[in-house]
Amino acid sequence: MNNEIQRDAGEHMFPRSIPDPASKQPAQQVRAETAPTLKLFVRGLSQDERQLLEGLVRVSQRRSPRLMLLDEHDAQGADVVLIDNNNAEASAWARRHSWLEDRAVIWIDAVRVASGHTLIRRPVQWSILPMLLARALEQSPGTAAAFATSRAAPLDLPNSINERPRPILVVDDSLAVRAHLRSLLEAGGFVVSESDSANAALALLAQQSFDCVLMDVMMPGIDGYEGCRQIKAMLRGARALPVVMLTSKSSPFDRIRGKMAGCDAYLTKPVDPKQLGEVLVQQLHAMQ
Image 1 (cartoon, rainbow, N blue to C red):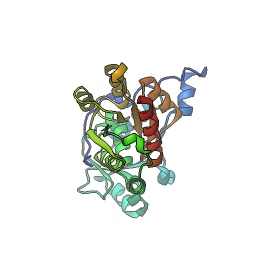
Image 2: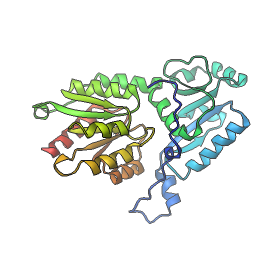
Image 3: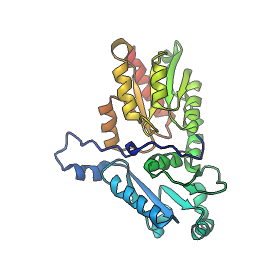
Image 4: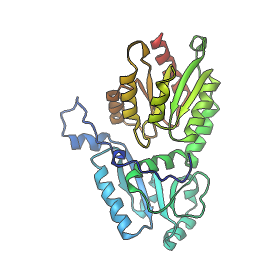
């Protein structure tokens, strides 16, 4: 995926939270306890941009993921740092803090960015902020190191799983994630196809047969939950196939949403090869 991410995905990037049907607590209290939180530290921005951002943070408290703005003394605890390169004070602050090199950082209007950092241009499309944050986390140096570590570990699969070619569809708008999963799956003997959106995946599933779908949750256009619902509606009975949801952040509430969408399993990125192998064995055995 290109570091310069500017696509208008609309307000659905803050999907409305679904109450836990097993809980009798007020919905607001359930959300506060279960919704994943992304901690954001911001340096720079105009007054108008700051007001827009603060409005999004308020809206996010009723949705998923929840956003939290940190003060400067908590900056190192941020999941993502957003820096306005046009602001001289913000640029000088960034140069003084070498710990940013290994973090998920989004730069606004920078000429170039360090490897693993994300570049966006003005006007910032604040409606897709959650997707920007998720992608910055995925391509950050820390996540890349986790990918490299997990890539070295092969899938542990019984020989019976791949007695015949096993086609698997990987759906993720991040090229890095797709390449990582392809390397794991092909080393395990699977035949891998890729789609960069749920819409493209649905079109491919109408033409080809697969044994399993690995689908990202947060994507532009149709998100992973809606994509899963449509796949399950389209492929039923003898044509039914397992859908495994993939996400950068995991919480019990996300798993509830995935189950309500019809997914068969839920994995957190970067995917652990051992866990991926166990899930594939379970799902493919269930199809036999």
